Amino acid sequence: MKLLTKTTLYFIILMLPVFAAGAFYLFHQFNKEIKHETDEELVNDHLEWLRYLDTASVNNPIFRFQTQEFRLIPTHQPVQQKFKLKGVALYQETEDTYAPFRELSQVINLHGQHYQMILRKSMIEKDDLLKNIITVMLLAFGGLLLFVVLSNWFISRQIWRPFYRSLDKIQQLQLNKMETLRFAPASTYEFNQLNKTLNQMTHRIHQDYINIKELTEDAAHEMQTPLAIAQSKLELLLQDENLSGEQLKNIGQAGEELQRLSRLHHNLLLLAKIENQQFPVTLQTDLCQVLTQYLSLFEELVHEKELTIETSLVPVARWPLHPALADILISNLLGNAIKYNYPGGRIHLSLTDKTFRIANTSHLPEIPPANVFQRFRKNNPVYTNSNGLGLAIVKKIGDSYAIHITYQYLDNLHIFTASR
Image 1 (tube, rainbow, N blue to C red):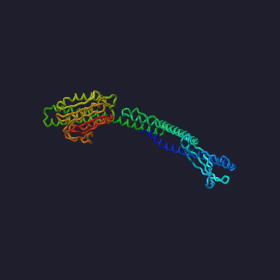
Image 2 (cartoon, helix red, strand yellow):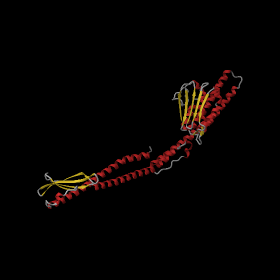
Image 3 (cartoon, rainbow, N blue to C red):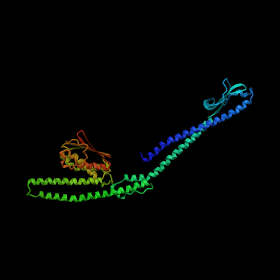
Image 4 (spheres, rainbow, N blue to C red):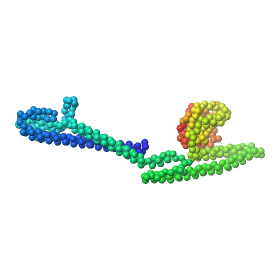
């Protein structure tokens, strides 16, 4: 969840109970005030009726007049010194429902006779008024809450804009383009400090990248020359007819080790270049075309081992890979599947726009999962001619280009899967 969304959500969660409590408190206060005003009206009417009844004769029709709002009923109850106020609900025949009233009742003495006087006032209009007030208040509170939330969201979004700009630049960061990367100053102090720190950090990273790049280039140039000279000298020695068989054997082994050292040197430099992102992707590579090309190149080896190759390939599979790295990925996986297979074995190839899967038979046991992509790990004597970097390079290519490389051993098959 984004920070802006989270802060807005927390703000709403905190504000809703506050607004609800405020609305409930105002409703309670309005209701209390309306009841108080109604009770005051009843008390005033009660005083007026007492003054009038004191002067009215017993034969006055008022003693026989009864409505929902006024009743004067003869009773044997004792005279009450204080009137009583309460809320009642009376049936309304016209609307077939009960309506709220406030009622004042008191037993009084008139002309030597006890009467119970009941005065009532309808609360219907006041309740409607209260409902209208509450509705208006709720609409006002809702509008105010919406305004506050939207204002907070827009203000926060504006304040956090420099942060998101810097974050977007970091997400698109590439080592080979870091020299031109600059984080602009911000009006907010904290973000301005962050951008200054990021500028310093990217400058240092770029300088380290340049130094490592120069080191790998220099190493490639300086080491390749003596290796080539040593190899050529050994080849000249092999042409000497005066050498014994033991000497020729030793020279041949030295030449093999030099070739192995040359391959190791090449692979280590390749790993360094991949880690330094020196293979930018400008166009997507058709992996089907690359796979078809290497199947053709390895055709003699396949024929020599009498291997059966089963394929399930889409006509075009464009992957976000540098062409050179696509060649290395396919050649390493396919080369291993052929090299470590037994005569008459099988290789199954499956390729889609999202997945490349290669499975091969072999007499070799399952590779320990912890070691399969480790550098210089060789767990079987058959790997003596390998420098242990092939699968490490495959894994590094996958990590650098968001391609998930996995290995599993199933039904006596070594299965490598690349998916994106």
